[in-house]
Each structure stands twice: as C-alpha cells, then as structure tokens.
Picture 1 (cartoon, rainbow, N blue to C red):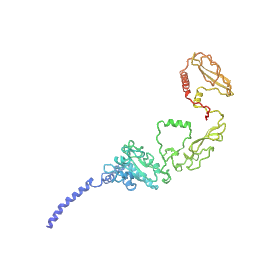
Picture 2 (cartoon, rainbow, N blue to C red):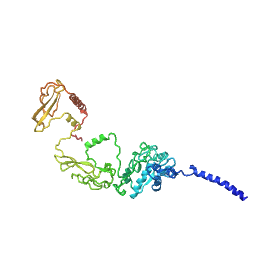
Picture 3 (tube, rainbow, N blue to C red):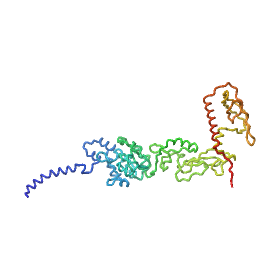
Length: 472
C-alpha cells in the first residue's frame, strides 16, 4: 500500500475520532453525574456569594467534607432495600436530587467538627431515602420509622448518625441550629422541630448565623447517651387528672435544672445528675445508688427521682408523705400516736368506719356534737313556706352534749319552717317584716330539696357497715 495514501487517510480519520471521543465525554448518560459542588466549583461564573448560598451558608462544599470524613457504612436494612446503590446517600446529583439539604449539610459539618475536636467521631448512617426505600424499610410506619410520604428523609432534610457521644450532640445541637425531634439519633434543622413531612415541607434556611459557645458544656465522655428525654405530649384531659391526683396525693414540686442553652428541664430527666450545672448545696439532688434516708428522719434533701418509693407513713406521732425524691413532708400530728403498722395515725375511737352512703348522709343531715364550751353562733333559718321568712339572729348559749344511750329529743318544729341546720340552736324566727327570697336562696333551696330526694332514692342501693355473721 502506498505510504502516502496511508498518511493521508490517517489524518482524515483523526479529526473524526477526536470528535467522537469528545461527544462521549460530554454525554451525561455515559459518565458519572457531577455533584452540585463540582458544578459550582468549576463554573467560572460562580461568585463567593453564590458559593456561600449554594453551600447552605458554608464557605466551602459541605458535601465533600461529609463524604470524606463522616460517611458511615449505611444501615443494614437500608442497604438491603437499595441493592446496588451506595448508602447513605448524602450528596445530591445534578438537579439537586437524591441528597440532603445544603443548609443541613453545612450545619452538620460544624457540629461534627466540634465533636471531633473533643475526641468524638460521628458517622452518618442514613440520609436521603427515596419513597420506595422508605416503604421497604418502614412499611406502614411505626415507632421511630415513618411510613413512606411522612418521613423527613425523603426530601433530604434529615439524617441518622452513629456515635458514642449522642448525648453530647443533643446538648450542643441547638447552638448549631439543629434539633433531635425525638429520643434517638435522628437530626434535622431547627426550623423543622417535628419528624414529619408536615414540619419539614420547606428547605432549611441557609442564611442563619451559627456562633456556638460550648465553653459551658462538659466533655462528651462525661455525658451519657440518655442525657435528655423530651416530654411526651399530654392528653387533653391530663390537666384535670393531674389536678385530682395532686389533691389526693400531694407531692413536692419537682426540682428543675438548667441546660447550657438556658432551657429548664426536670432534674429527673437528666440521667447523669453529676454532669448538670452546679446547683446550690441545699438543692443538690442525691446521686443514684446512694442509701435512702431512714423513715422518720424528716429528710429535706432531694435525691434522684425514683430513689425512694412514694408512700405515706407515721413516725414519732407525726403523719408524713415521702416523695420519690425521698423528701419528707409532715402532714399532721397524730393525737393518739401511730398505728401498730406505722402506716397511719392510730384511731381515737373504736367506732366502725362509716360507709360512703353514711358519710354523704351526714353531710346532708348533720347532727349536733358536744363541745362543752359557750360559743356564739350565727343562726341561719330559711323559711320556704308561708310568709317566706329568712332571718339572721345572734345567740350566745353553750351547746349541749347528746351522747351515750340517752335519746336525743328535738324540740317541736317551728311553724312554717321546712329547713333548719341541725347543728345550730332552735329558736323562733325573728319577727321581722316579711321579705321576698333572693334568687340565690331559691336556688339553694331547690338544690337542697333535690339532694334530699336523690339520697332518699339511692338509700336502698347503699351499703352500710354491719356486723359480719359467721355461718357454719
């Protein structure tokens, strides 16, 4: 073959080969899709302001830092649900898809750097998830794993982390505009306080200033993972039930402790009381495992919540209530001393305990009791029939004793009177000019009549304490 012809053919083919190679290299489908950071960094039109906004407030690409220094191996379940796809999926591809929010990435790099400077390494175990991945992992949803369409992982606005210092991260997160929305390793931007798409339906704010002051925080090694458990939301009726519970079972107000960000939380929610901020000596709670004080010592030092079982007890002729923090509260003095069991005051008489019906009836129809000293009563008489006379009259006379076996004979009822309080003296109504009953007195009279009728109706269903008969 003619060498001149070969050289001529070669130089004709070379331009076509170069053009084909350039086309292959420029086709996105034939090469790896560039990351957002690569596109921004390589563009000659990108200004420092543009780069700062695109990187979520950081001056450099946060995705590169997270991929290089904080990429974990991915959760086993997530890896099984995404065969052939590397997890976790941190960096968005062209079009800002399949990756986490840029502002979230920026804040995470700053938090993770602060943790690493204190000897704690943090890895991202899960980041962006597609709808199919979320469905595969969580199905219809459950505790700590939302159903597809309800998770903040799908729009890329949440990550899960693995670390030995989760407790410290939870303490410091607020200063980096981050939040743990529930007890676990799930982190979101502070603008999205709840782990639900209704909370994280907008991007994180890339312009928030982040100036943390961690000088008051203890080292990560001194903070357990269970540092703070957010309180659960109360039921609508919780206020009523709590008020009733506190009335019948009074407890000392729980001691509050201040976190580094100024937030007040119950001391009992802090698993390691030794790592909390310094409290006054008289308010320092006791340490877990310390021997609780003896009953009757009238202890005033608060121990860790749960150290002592809440209970009522009687000691040294005083009835106490001991809370779960071991603080003793004197309720009353026992006139007859303590019972043999030491759980309550000793009875002052041998009379049987009245039934519930008897107690209600005693309120509706009180009887006279012996006092033995002259008293000055205010006699209240309500006349409902006749001329509707209502009078107030001062009387000064000693009350009389009606006890023992001597039957008590009440004086004959006054004319035109249907109700007189039995624990006051009977006396004729003052002969004042008739006056019309007020609306309030009419209402009280109707209520009294209604209550008496109700008690009369319920009496056959009541139970009265009677001697127990033994049958052979």
